[in-house]
Length: 133
Image (cartoon, rainbow, N blue to C red; front, side, top):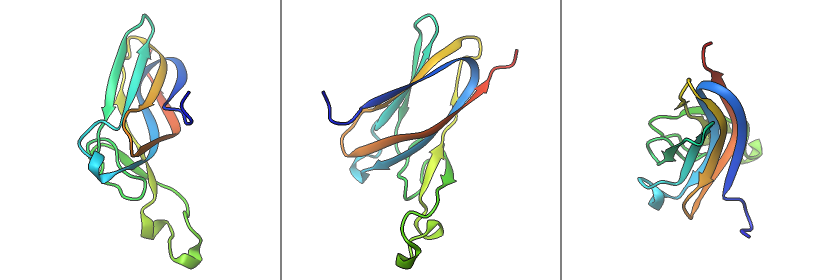
């Protein structure tokens, strides 16, 4: 058994046009341009779709926004103000990342996997945009 989890599965059970995970992570500079994680969409009927998380394309570090696809979502203060490290100076953020879904199929669950060493992948939230009727 691993001491920390390498994956998390979130049940959905809806037909979705897209999902927006809110990702928070750390990327070691030597791990850019290689997959650091995966988002696996599990559809009803057994079909899976994998989106690789590759910095700087769709994943970045929490302290600096450089992802080409993600949208930065600022976080609150990360150190006491006495040290001079507040949000505006550090850039601490999570990234909202749009993942397109197959609106014709029910999205049973989403799996988030960490796939490399010297990196951290955290899921702070998930928003599902339902498919039109």
